[in-house]
Amino acid sequence: MLLDRIYYTVNSLEGDYAYLKKEDDVSDELKCVARALLPAEIAEGSRLVYEMMEYSIV
Image (cartoon, rainbow, N blue to C red):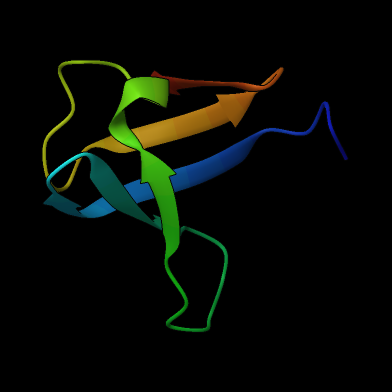
């Protein structure tokens, strides 16, 4: 599971945190991630991939 690719969409940016929506998740649960762990150029609606313990823009 650690090496799987997981796709997210940035739902909202609030201060130092971003709220991400897992693309293949049918629930409304959002993942809160510190913006320091994400690429600097993200914006609401950006599509991210989490792979090898790193987030990058798709």
